[in-house]
Image (cartoon, rainbow, N blue to C red; front, top):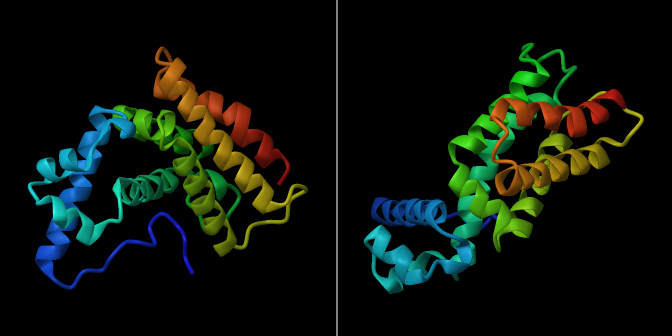
Length: 198
């Protein structure tokens, strides 16, 4: 049984049901950009989405389930920024460069700073971190990566977890650092040491 954050996603055939679900997810995303997860009530979400209270429960068991789906989508988008970093040395990957990939990741987070601050520094932090690591491991297991002195799975767990921890620190403590400067720190502290072991 799949227990990932996105396993509850429904491929609704009814267009109205799909629109309702999308409206609730958009409302959750908007609310997360404004306040901490702990401060959001189901009624806040249903009012923002323009749906009835009972409708919420036709789609989600609770607020955490809605959060998990939103977080899963955000993590997928964030991982799309980090995959080029993890694939350095893959001959099928266009030469994008380590620095530009990490910069893109930090720019993505910075552009959605309020949302990511909520996801990484509030009550959702452990859930989001675990899902980021899970998705990174899932991605790494699908590719045939070159042999390394450090097991790829271990490197993936360490890189993904440390990247999320670094981003959380940046969002809480490092407001003075530009995305470009912070990307350089992530490269030096997290990514380059792992790549040197490959």
